[in-house]
Image (tube, rainbow, N blue to C red; front, side, top):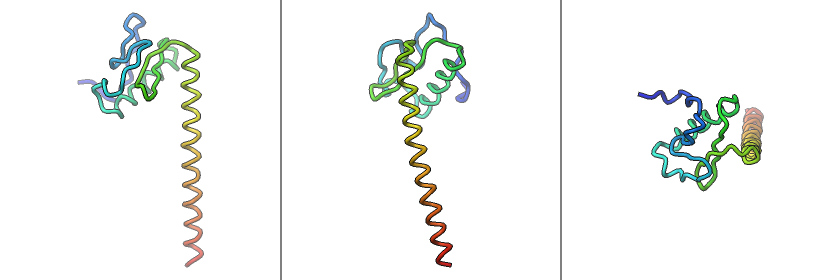
Length: 111
């Protein structure tokens, strides 16, 4: 039985397939027979291996699905987009924390 939390093995350059995701061809998310959360976790682990210089391919994600690439320009664009998404998410979380602090201060004022 496979351990869900294990990172993928080092990618073999002669076998450009991971979870059914292949080089230069979009694989729709629905075609991957795993829960979405599991796919995202495995893709993140796979891409971490790229960041550790253990493989030369990276998995991109879009509304079209998933696609493997070794094009550094595409990888950089994907990473930049992820950074933008994380910044937006952090801003929303910061706004929520600020609201929570305001609510707490108002409740203290009422006591």
